[in-house]
Image (cartoon, rainbow, N blue to C red; front, side, top):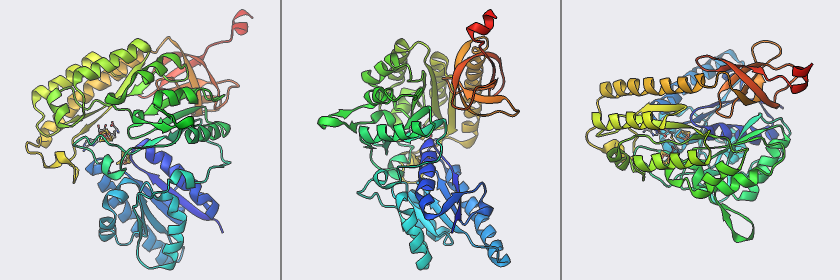
Length: 453
Ligand code: SAH
Ligand code: SF4
Ligand code: F3S
């Protein structure tokens, strides 16, 4: 009998990857994906614990799902199994079941390959089933591998999980555990399968992806730069990206990969969080603002068309106006094509949550607004500078009307193009004709013979 599955994904790209793998592991057990929770027999919330808001969202969503289930039961139109996966599941475990006892399954990010068997157990036993182990076996070895369904043009591939950095504000080292890298051969084999299924761009994922150290043949181990070179050997893989990197782990080999590997895209998400050395130290970021600037310079020397994206936190405990000004200065100097910025959120169990001198909410909000105004101006400048240029575009999805396709530039900007006989998965050169708030418009560069005709 086919059963219907709805997965709602919160948080980072790694959760997006995990959701795909969960769906694949449930497919052989008769689950097919649907577009909304009210059609589903099984609803999985794949959750994020990074900031308080993200974590609280899960409980309001669970409240809604519980009501929906009660209505269904009362009307005799079916039943729903509710599962919570991801980082809230890992961080709260038993607590989550105490606060939301109507939840059927709680499964952590390292245990979701066991979902099918947890569902069977749940059907037999009363009460919530919970698994937040960091099992000895690797889920990657046990998840289904030979998938037939088409892959997206731009696919994610987790190569590294966990984090040993312990920034004082961050829950990830607790929810995802210690750094573990997948062997090179496994990563390359998964990449080849994705390309065979239609992927043309692969983003290598890790909480700290450039700390990657994967086992290779002959007792060797490869870093991320070397892994990118291996990936570049795969025919039909046009673009390689990676996220998220730590400034401390950008090594010479990775910089050389940016210089030498054409498929390695000239766009890099490199979080800095703050431009103040005092705060960087209090955050335990393990680098200074100057070291960050130097890493950026070296990357830009190797690849002059490199553009950067970053993450910023305002209102970290003890942040003074001077600290904040230092962050603005760093942004002015480095210039970012895009960025994410957040008000500091106190997370239980992290060292920063008990630091004295927490910043008042009003100051946080004002700083965030000022920071975002600057970052938005820079993003706008960057996008506007593309107008009139000829840029490579990889088509990913249909546009609003027939004949139109939406693709991305190397800098991940969406471009709307009248694509003629080109199809999703094709790449071509496009002249950028206009820039809008969140996208660009472009025209196909006419082929030489058309120009002559
Ligand atoms: N591994 C990645 C980031 C993971 S979290 C890295 O090292 O950059 C993504 C972003 O969320 C972080 O870069 C940080 O800017 C933000 N973040 C993490 N914890 C936070 C907290 N407690 N409050 C506000 N923002 C936070
Ligand atoms: Fe969190 Fe810092 Fe690790 Fe990134 S490097 S996941 S911010 S602890
Ligand atoms: Fe959130 Fe977990 Fe990713 S806390 S950001 S889903 S690693």
